[in-house]
Image (cartoon, helix red, strand yellow):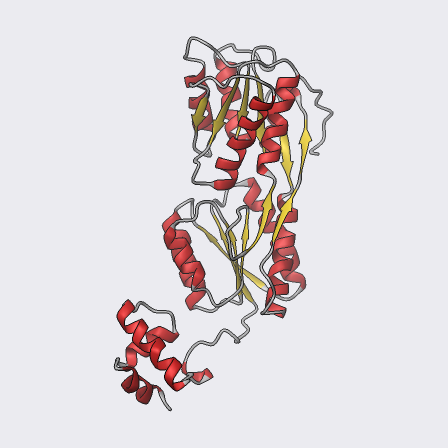
Length: 335
């Protein structure tokens, strides 16, 4: 049976059948007719009739949210190191934190048949999930967990909890947090949950106005700190969702003559070079970003070799690096 005969049996056009097998747009009614006909006839297109997922291109799509991000650069470095050894080329897409561009990039790699995709995830919309569920090539997600996919993630909640507990142990009684969007389940929701857990475990009360939501920028961290210190009661410690946000908070404190760590302790997450050169240097949790890239690439290669491999999630741990912003000693070096 050829495609024309199958289209007639299904009661749809030849182009509709072609779109179905190439994952193009198709109404649900036509999709249902085609799937019913497939069950009755057992029809399958010939390998030359469409792009087949068995074709090896030695190309891997890597989708990142921000080209200038140090964490993204470290993950990408790890991915590249593994892929190059195996003769694969990396196609890098920078989405500039635009969720629509992420979806477009997934669709690009899906229809142009890269061998696999590594996605540095941020927020997963229903459209993301719909496209991901149609992928016929392996997809590895870094930085987030998504059911049904292999993922490399970090212990974000644990890192935030331990940093907050550190500041409370050093005498803080009025903890505040500068978080990021809770749609981001790792950097947003998990880190805020870790902060709240540490506050609760210490028997402290979280003031209603001591939670700020920031963007992933120094300017936003600066403005969030400004809002915190514009209120009658001031925090004596601040957990920031990232080192970049923490650097912005420190800058505001420096301009406002608020001493760090004497008046307020500040922590970030990520252990970035920016946190190392900030003044005072920022206490942070080192997340193993390059390791995440190495593991993601290895996981993808394994999925390419064994198409029936089971999805799994690997959670990487963290290290606390105490610096001057919580009263620690800066011993030098890049850690």
